[in-house]
Amino acid sequence: MECVFGLVGNDFAVVAADTSAVHSILVHKSNEDKIMILDSHKLIAASGESGDRVQFTEYIQKNVALYQFRNGIPLTTAAAANFTRGELATALRKNPYFVNILLAGYDKETGPSLYYIDYIATLHKVDKGAFGYGSYFSLAMMDRHYHSGMTVEEAIDLVDKCIVEIRSRLVVAPPNFVIKIVDKDGAKEYAWRESVKDAAVASA
Image (cartoon, rainbow, N blue to C red; front, side):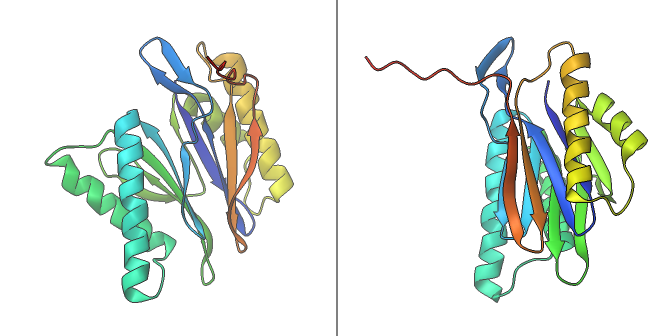
């Protein structure tokens, strides 16, 4: 029951994801961060099979860092999105990854952007997007309340509305969410929305 969604505001992009690590009917942990900081000004939020999600996002992160190390300049958000899409397309014909991605970034020349990349290597630049069962509700809320040029406060309020809707409407709703923002000052964690905390492991 994964939920990943994001939107572009005025000079920033925000992405949110549930933090549940689930297999079959079991919840293994409820503080799994599914939004990776790709580089100083990019975020990659992913949903899908846990192994594919972790392996593929780390692979993209290291290759983006390698490009910057070799060439002395970072990839733009559009270039990183196209590279990610190309790797998914290549894998699709060999050993496909079941992973869906929202890639958010900020570039000095073009400002904030959000890219939608699904597991069959579809790439779209979007103002708002979502993956998972939560997308049924978060997309509806964003269609109703989203507008261009949103402030950070308006965007976070909309994200919170989406989280409340998912928690109240989805039959097996994830309890916790993490929210991250990327703007001219870089990519950073903004907040956690937690209704369940993992219990501390008792020492033997």
